Amino acid sequence: MNTHTASRPAAAEKTAPRRKRRIDGKDLIFNAINYIVLSLLIVVTIYPFYYIFIYSISDSIEAQKGVTFWPAGFSLEAYRTTASLPGIIDAAVVTLSRTVIGTVITVFCCAFFAYLITKEELPFRKTIYRFVLITMYFNAGFIPWYLTMKTYGLQNNFLLYVLPSALVGFNVILIKTFIEQLPASLEESAKIDGAGYFRIFASVIFPLSMPIIATIAVFAAVGQWNTWFDNYFLVENPKLQTLQLVLYNFLNQSSNLSNMTTEQLNRGDLVRTLTPQSIRMTITMLVTLPIVLVYPLLQRYFVKGIMMGAVKG
Amino acid sequence: MDMTSTGAAGPKRRLKSVHRRKDGYKLLLAALPFVAIAFAFSYVPLFGWIYAFFNYHPGIPLAKTEFVGLAHFKDMFSDARMGPVLVNTLALSALSILTAPIPMLFAIMVSEVRSGWFKRLVQTVSTLPHYISWIIVYALAFSMFSTEGAVNTMLIKTGLGGTPVDVLGNYDRVWTVQTLLLLWKSVGWSAIIYLAAIVSIDGEQYDAAKVDGAGRRRTIWHITLPSIMPTFIVLLLLSISNLLSAGFEQYLVFSNVMVADRIEVLDLYVYRLGLVTGDYSYSTAVGMFKSVISIAMLFTVNLLSKKFRGQGIV
Image (cartoon, rainbow over all chains, first blue to last red):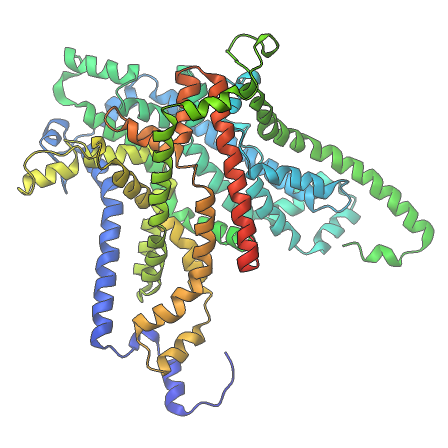
């Protein structure tokens, strides 16, 4: 960047594209090792996902003999059967609902609260802000949490999935920081037009904060999709099971679902074309696929999010 | 913020301040529901700590239960299970701290990749496991390492292994296996923060080193590594303050009859005492003990960091 008077060759070296560097032996070895190790890492990460995919589309009986790199035969029977398993549709609906509703609630609460905190007119502003932020650092523990949720009547209640996570301290910090760097003039002009706080929030602040809102929405959505401990500890109602838990129970052979399937298999109702292992792989696939599909698109939001967090923290 | 109002004339200003106060009430009213949410879901559970001082049994109101003071806390010292649980917790935490340099190393390796697409590929792929739940990790691990899983199938097909090995049910190796699984899930994600630190290093330092004839390994050793060390130290301190919180979900899903004894960490024990054994009061006491020590450690580490580095970590 600085404007120094460099001799010609030096300047040429500086402007030359980096890939056109001198290649010496040591560098070559370094590069080779680096690429090999990183490639291995890619394989180790991707292979398990690939494996469940090829297993799930394999012919179940063929697959039992072992699947490694290619599907053994081809059959979508496992998907057809999985879709018809009792409870799986309910679980998908519950998981989707908690993801959508939970995300909307978190985004709205964190964003609106962050906006309120940026208002200097708010009495006890600092106190209120700290009161919420401190919640990031302590945790009452398992039994107090469990009993409190029960007292609130959230046991076997869909609201358990979406209410407790409404206000997240970390998100509030991110949004507040973002709103503070928006030009104040935009809000002023809306105010002169007679808009109230909520109107200003909804029509000016929220749309302008989209970059950070999107990041937080993605974080929240993935979190909702993946959360299962609330379901595991406090929800028994089969109509409110999440996909994650259905998968967990199936893996552990502890659910009615898997017992039933195994029974049916043993009785021969499901003709012997399908093994529990195939069903297991297929459910895993169904729970994982949405994340894997949307993930590359969302990756940049994530990275942005953690960078902002890092700058803050 | 409101610089313009200071220059305004008297009466106008008073009018404005009345407005402001009215606005203030409105804002306060709007903020109250959120304060209530934070209170209800984060503070109210704290009152549950009171169970630790009673002999509480579900169904009987607290007023009718016996107050036992610190008895449950004393019980902890004579609890034979407490020792192994603490050993598990500390061992698993220590192992994950030992692997802490790996994400840093990984970030350096990624930053040394010249090809743009390969760099992006490595980053995207390595971060993926962070976004899946421990249940899915369990499902994947099961499909890889169970006796009929991919790894055993491959070993047998290639003739490298005779009898299938049950990796997830191996009592002796369970700490190693769990640490590797945790590393698999977190290495890419943990590396992001180091990559950010590396990107922000001034490029001229590298140019200057190159002019002086430094090779790749020397620039890494003398420029990259020292530049990201502060980040490493902060993260290390944070993980030390989290010593007692070895991942609950991970060990819950990977727990099985064969290995349960060795991966029962403190959080898991608290859960088992409470919901499985039904000893609410003792469970709360153990949980409270853990929370208090964790917070104390966080403050201590923060204080030490302030003293020796000039800045805190939280």
